[in-house]
Length: 638
Image 1 (tube, rainbow, N blue to C red):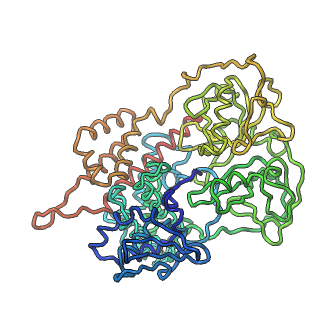
Image 2 (image 1 turned 90 degrees about the vertical axis):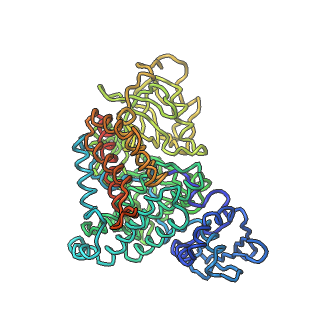
Image 3 (image 1 turned 120 degrees about the vertical axis):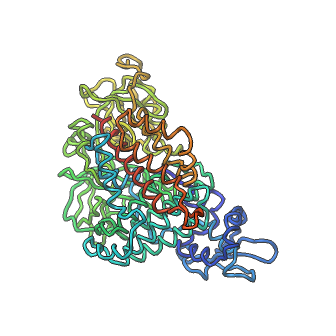
């Protein structure tokens, strides 16, 4: 995960404590219509004027007679309305108080569990399509059917009909109503876009998210908080914000809320508030590698990946507040598991015998009171249970991954370096007929050694090495390596110290010149890097659909409507149909038509168009795009 300053409101807001979503939503809701129009302007500069007092409170002064004081609780979060006070005459329904709360970071609604390492999963219809889906019409059918099944009537989910369906889907009537309210707020936020998605729009989303939390829909609430944080970062022009990430967050929120509001979803879509651990008995696990963990909410640490004797994957995480500094230091921290006397560096190259183990559904080992762990010797890659990780081509491993999962699993392969392409390393598997692969940094932060290690590897064309990483299912034939080592028996491969046990953790260990074979003999690439082959995603006309969807997120409904009035829609449809993406052309045309729809009332006057109808059209196009891109990515591995 990459660091996202938006989660803290940017570098100037470090003094302001985090605020519970419902506190901010209530403060904005209490403002008059006149004050709401001034809120976005009032928020600017609040963080820069924050001053911390000796008692831990934070004050922000507005003029001579108004000071807003935030007094967070023991957790460091403002969780109650009376913890934010203003000295002006209009308090607590004043602009000053709402502005300071709006400038503060948004707190997680409950104590956050350690974040899972690696990229966020693509949820919804894109995941349903899976790596095995065929590109073109079949992908469009999968995505469109799923999106429309979640949609129900074009005007949005009806509360009355949804309550009856809730019984069959395992949802309560309160959950369906909460999801419908969240869907409506998300639709309005999408129609507004980043340009008009200010504090008032964000507060409506936060209010609906809090209602979803009370109703027992933590997954929907988490999706809404990601959208709000993304809107904040985009409006603040944060360097860490990516429009593609915000587009994906909107897609996940609309899909989750829409499916829940329709009453057709099962209880599995609600999510879990707390991670449940179950008894795992006695285990013997071996270390694979370490991975730094950075979250958007300021948490940092390490996740050490393990493999059981039966081939099952496990991990031990140590993630706490601290961000980058803690992520770098946690790699050598002690393992807090059943009294085991070793650190994460030792565990990554060693092993554990665990008695009374507790295991989460994701494979994380818990540190319960009855857990006992003893350090044992490790195994080299390719020996014992680890041999299965490198026994089949990467294409087969990717195809065997489940269509729907929390995140893609780890895979290993032996590759030969072709050369560099930007920040990627072009490699080809040693398996005959294998496609060209791209090695990309698992964590792009410059303070972590992933990118630097890949640059050193790219400087040795012809080098053969063994890599273990996680496939990036959002990019064509891309593997994000976590560790690398020499290929057994290969002459021109990495030369690592014996104590590294044949692998280097690319997030912690730094490769040096001595780790590479000396001289240039034998290190001759068998193909040139410029002739690396085509990228099916970059070369397909689907980028036009992606640009249309991202334009809608950035500029709102108005931006999509403007795009519908030029010559671009015809060019977009023609390019898509020529490439065989007929369903994509239809969905894009439906989106632009709905965005430009201007209904009139009985007297012929212009009326506000339905934000929900526009949201359904946008979601259908976004779902199809995600499914089609996933199919192209799957094909690129074959």
